Length: 541
Image 1 (tube, one colour):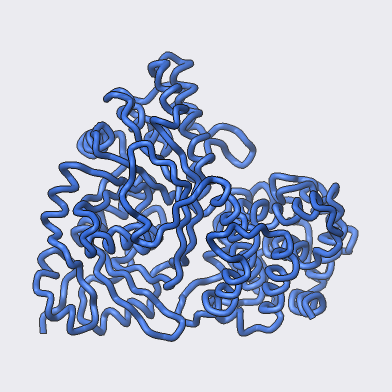
Image 2 (tube, rainbow, N blue to C red):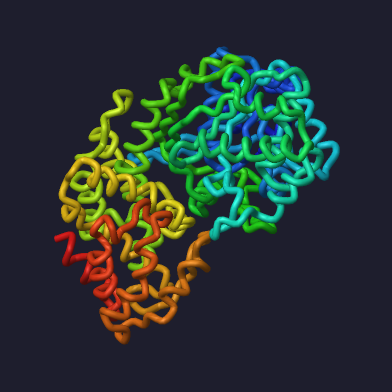
């Protein structure tokens, strides 16, 4: 029997795919590609799993329903091999495997991507195509999933990154930094008649639109100041009737491609399913495994109009409501729970988030952080109910045994997450006059993070820390701490300076009155093997 191939030719014969439960595109894909290339309306930066599982799938729904007749164009600017080794060999098709909590699986061939591009200013063919797209009247929006650090123009010490500084000095012709290239494409749009566009960050970070605006505007300011761009470019970026930077809140868990899912698909006789690990250590496969739940709430600010994405389930509202939804999710109802499970999951030797929810201590930890410490200071945004949201998180989403998410993945960039995921709750307690001492377990997560940075689990075994831009800055503070050996005073002294760092925790923990609590927990967590478990059990019981 011939194996099925995930290519445009490979899906022409629909019968073998449909017999094995795959849902294929219900539209003329070749016609869609033709129309999209002629008049692009949506470009997305960031070719990772969340894009394929969410934005691309949403466009497919609208295409299937006949709401739109054009697809989406994806652009990769960090790891070009994702496009070269995965997208193009499969004609920009992918398989979306939706893993439901009841154990059922939906398999969908996503064919809504009309074109894949590489954001490389040194590649004239690729970059000319992007300039052409950005110069056209039809382009309505550019969306982003490039992670929070993708918008950063400085290193962990606040020093401007070398390629950013060089791009700001040299101008928009051939920038090498990610946002420098994005800004140069906007400059192309400006030169072609100040054409309007919405620049929509859909990254999982607070006030994401402001982060994108701040980064792009920094380039506009420097280029104008250096005489590398027209003065009008800065005005264009700051004119919301021309360029908008809406806020958004996105939520959908899309872990790294899982071997069990790969095996499931291989039983269907599909060839070429193996992961590709690029030279930049990106894991990418022809399929994406994702949960069923998804939310995308966007500030409705689109100067060149927009497609009817509400018909794909997107929620459009005002900035204030997006802010409330984002704080509800990022600061209380999901992200803080995930980070707590990531830190303690690594320390306790877990490799699946769902398995952690079978651990009574860890389940109590997230329930207490969510319901008792966080929920009392959350404002109901109206479009989503906080208690119902957190109920779904703790009862359906995180415990889903079919979701192959890991604490090690979620522990990535923890230093960037702590100030938002917990700092806002602390600030709310201080601002509303609540007793800060009511916060018992958020400080335990901070202490757990310091213990995690020692890279020794609760059984005394070494493990590899997940990538984090602040590791080399923070780790030296605790490098002298030893399990069983360091005293309570030594433990407290080691982290004392860090506890006053508001950029790490969202607020100065010394001034907030939580520093001593964190120090005490940390001292208990380093007492020896089993100390993480005993300390956790002591305080969540």
